[in-house]
Length: 283
Image 1 (cartoon, rainbow, N blue to C red):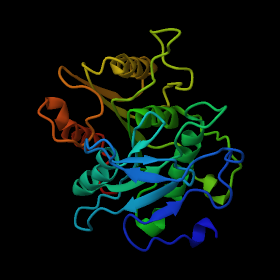
Image 2 (image 1 turned 120 degrees about the horizontal axis):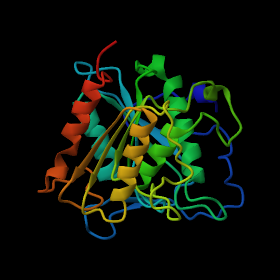
Image 3 (image 1 turned 180 degrees about the vertical axis):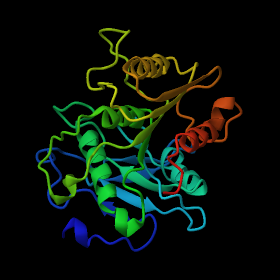
């Protein structure tokens, strides 16, 4: 099967990211993929992902702006919170006229590799694959966003700050850039350098060319709030476009949940930012 033969039949149908062997998976022992709400907390957890996919959720024709956003759920690179940080986000994006692509990247962390190694490969390939579908899906390849939560926010930062190089053998689809045009980071994790608390982690290298970013986090997110501030400072100092919201109340992991704190209104702030930045303007 080739990537060109993978035709979308219905919204949400998974499309494999890789045509043959998934890079770096040889010798990795991963259990059977499972989807469960095992803690009765309303969080759907997808675990043991060894066959990464994307699923396309087109915006309604009467609202469609042509913009598209790849959604990366969080889960500490151990699982994927695939509903309130995944499919629910796609529904919201469709409601504001944005096409959505749900990324199911590899988890848990692979043995003897950086926690983000396999997810970054999947994320970069997803952006290139989405751009390759521009004509078929009637999307604008110059308005491709990436939105991630927690570990997915860390993944978003890496994809945005990449120089475009990849750690896997290139195929025809990889002629399309793996760098998004903009990013939305929601309570991003793992951005603060543990060896230097005033610096970003080495895998996130902000430059003046880093695409525009929107960042939202709560002050009560004690472990990760400083990373969001450091990302903003790096963007500001580099002369790159960035908007940061640090809300006074709230914790970590709220996603699309209905919560009483004002931070629960982050989708409206993000939509306003995308509109102001003209990513939602029909071209």
